[in-house]
Each structure stands twice: as C-alpha cells, then as structure tokens.
Amino acid sequence: MISVAAILAGGKGARLLPRSGKLPKCLMEFGGKPFILHQIDWLIDQGIAKVFVCTGYKHELIESFLSDQHYLKDLVTCSREPNALGTAGAIKYLIETKQLNGSILIVNGDTFFNFKLDQKLIMDKLNSYQALIWVSKIQEIGRFAQITVEGDKVTKYREKEECDGEHSSCGCYVFDCRQVSAVVDQISSLEEDFLPGLVRNQKLGCIKIGANGFYDFGTVESFDQLLVSSNNWISK
Image 1 (tube, rainbow, N blue to C red):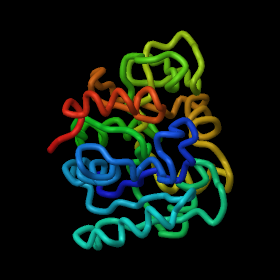
Image 2 (cartoon, helix red, strand yellow; image 1 turned 180 degrees about the vertical axis):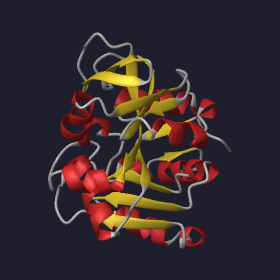
Image 3 (cartoon, helix red, strand yellow; image 1 turned 45 degrees about the vertical axis):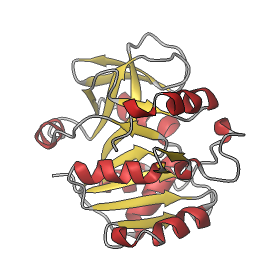
C-alpha cells in the first residue's frame, strides 16, 4: 500500500513567465484556489496519508501558504533543498532527512491527474520492477519525455526529444526509498540520470492510462488552454 507521496515543487517555472509573475507555479490559481491544493486533494482521494512538498525556488511563499492551511497540519510537510539538487537529488534529500522507507509516490508539481491509483496493480508490478512510471499516448512530441514500452516494461526513455516511442511520461512515479538513496548522486536529475539508468537495467515498469488521465500546465500555451477548459480538469 502506497501511503506516502512527494510533490516536486522546487522548479523556477521559467517556461510559464510572464504568466506566473512572482509566484512559484504551484501557487498559481485554477478554479478558485492554488494548484497545489488541487494536487493535495487528489492525493488524499487516492488514500495517501502523508504528503511531502519538495521546495526550492521561492520556498518561503510555498511554506507560508501551506502553514496557513491548518486542516493540512498533520498531512503536509515541506522539504526544502539546501541548494539546487535537481529532481532526483531533491527526492534523495527528502528520503534521507525524513528517514523514509518502503515505496513512495512522486508527482510533478505542475500536473493535474485524473485517474485512480490501483494499489493492487502497483504492488503486483513492483514484484517485477524496481520502479514504475505512468504513461499515456503521446500528446505533444518534444514537450514530454518520449517512452517506448514492450508490454509493461519501459525499453527506451528520451527526455523531451523525438524518438520512436508511442507514449509520454505523465509525471507520476513510484520508487523504492532504499534504492533511490543508494544509487542517486547528491545532485542529479530524475529525468536525465535516474530513470534512464533504470531503463538500462530493465527495472522500470509502466502503468498505461488514457489520454485524458493527466494535464501538464508547464508552458504559457498550456496554462492559457487550461484557463479556457478548466472545468474539464478541476473538481469543484
């Protein structure tokens, strides 16, 4: 049973300027509240009992906002990078400083998810793989990691460049805390270092979801489109 999750919210969100202004992108509002609350609500709905928010850029704004959400006091904790560690480095830092073990769900901080976590399926696949990634049919070549799969095994992973894969990364993963701590360097990238290493060792499995299972708002164009069609993505 996956009961612990981490939200990667430490990036600068440069592709969202000038829409984001002085805010980190996880605090941009959709449907009347900052996005991070939509994401936390989704995690709660999936049975997650503890959420860590990995912060970096403008961490003080995120931490201040979450500390004001008193109903989240026992659920959400921030993990601030001491310096820029990269996405994999931030996860390693979280695991080691919070002394986490077992499996952890990792989600990108700029993505809506519209699917249910199948806990039994996750546990079954973790018997064969060290980590899992959720994938969907390619939406936009060059914007998402391009992935080739054979059955439920990831055989190729290319970060934001064209390859012969038919699937995109949805920005949702399950990792084993001990393995991350053992193999990840202090400063490293999830997308460029850790995931390709798992693929080379044939240890990355996948779970396929439909094209409407996720929505990433990490660019100005996708942000503007979300504002127009927010009712399709936001539960009110």
